[in-house]
Length: 459
Image 1 (cartoon, rainbow, N blue to C red):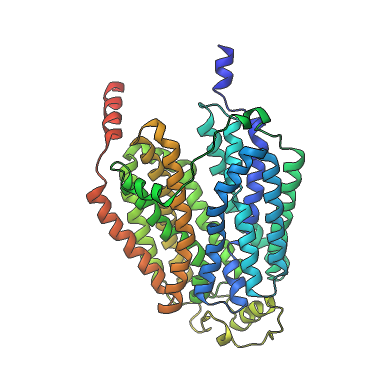
Image 2: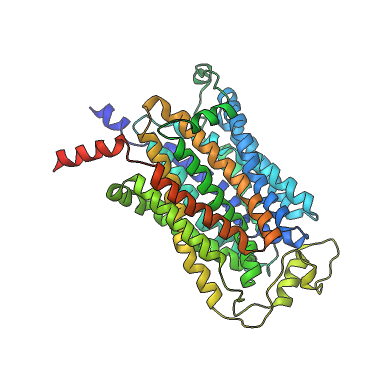
């Protein structure tokens, strides 16, 4: 009896080092996200190039995760975590020292392949839990993501404020967190996959294009995989292009964007950390998906209509100088704003309305984005057999990562060719079309029959 009760409880002491290491790793990433598009703008990058820069990290993460996962199965979790963290540390140092656009790309490519170690961290959780505690353990990875996307932008804001908006300083701070994660992994983390366990692991089947196509044709969950890809194409693209949009419409610098990212992060964490469980029990996952698509369509469309009104503290000359000072190639701080690839707003008609508008539109956008991924994955697991769950969630993750890589490229191309409004209207229209398609194609499944029976029995 005692043994059974122990097995049903998560061993937090064993999981805590993994959680802390993942959180610190993520802080490095989330410190960089709000300022990266502006950093690239300082080097004269076009919106399309900035979109490609945003895609570099998730693309390399997508390609690297299976490789690092197999290496960790063969050599153990700890050495792979340490080596990949050293790569992340090097990537942040290169980002801080970059004096050209190609070095920014190289830094993000290095960090992306190293950032694929999240799969190794998840494997460490799996090693350290039982079947009954695994979901709770893996849920802590999600909690680390949520905390990272709130704390990281706050650290970015503080480091920018203390350094006089020197964009290199947050990159150095991110490198500091990465170094701390290396030290913690080397000294605190205990190997979770013993040599005996490694010899028992069979070779995993590679994730192929054929497997993705077959999964989309699955009668029970094919539409859900399409929705997973499409919603993240919009939400992931929104996250990567947002800093460019607020620069163009509101004249927000990296510090201002860090605050905006905190606002979005709080909404997403509130939804995923507590509200979605209550909503799922009350309305069911299928209806949550309808609601998430509708809210994302509404939020993104109206965000694209944000008025061209710079914030009250906006100073065009100061912002231009700030961007040019980031570029050490000899550009003068007095260079005209017209030489930048992104048009800055003029100083007439400054006010609060533009900022208020975009913050209001971020509420449905953040709620919709926070709902969709967990609701879709939850419904997938309820509509397939137990022995398909792991593989299908892996495919869902592949679609999610692929969309994260493609979204900023599409957003950057539309931004450059048609203006800053175009990406958001495009994504909003796509979400509206998917909402209409989901109403027609996503019908009640066996899970709702089971829930109805359980409700009737409990009544």
